[in-house]
Image (cartoon, rainbow, N blue to C red; front, top):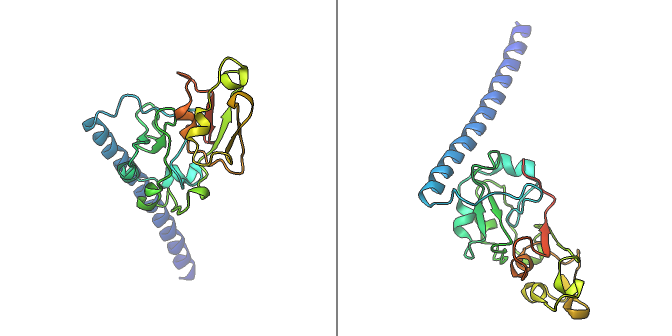
Length: 210
């Protein structure tokens, strides 16, 4: 009888584990379908495509694998964002469909941190001080930056930086230098860059699209 009880216990645990995984997958799928319908209603299907080499998640985002498994695709973080910097990944990124990201070249994050307080799943952890945000690191391409290559004088990224003279300092012709200890990766510098298309300063997050 003890052998039968042990087998039953193992089978029960296996069943419950499988049931939990199925329920989680179903929730994510249903969430994705709900977001797809939401995006269709609000005409968001065009455009919202992730940068495959560096996905910029909102403040408080946990590591990418856990983020994708916990994010409910509920749109609460996007709804809470007053600047409209949070977008939802569209059908071109199937694994990430409906997950929030920031397209800094369009609109950088203003670090209001409202999104971190509205996430119900833990995909975004609460952040209370903007200095504690770590979305990524701004990287300057000195070949295309007009202040670095000598083709002009700019300084837009420095002006836009919420931690100017700490995260970004200036040299000759206002040439920017990024300081890793202070940069939070908000992307306001990337938004402000005067170059069209590929910006001379971009935030690298270390996250790649699946």
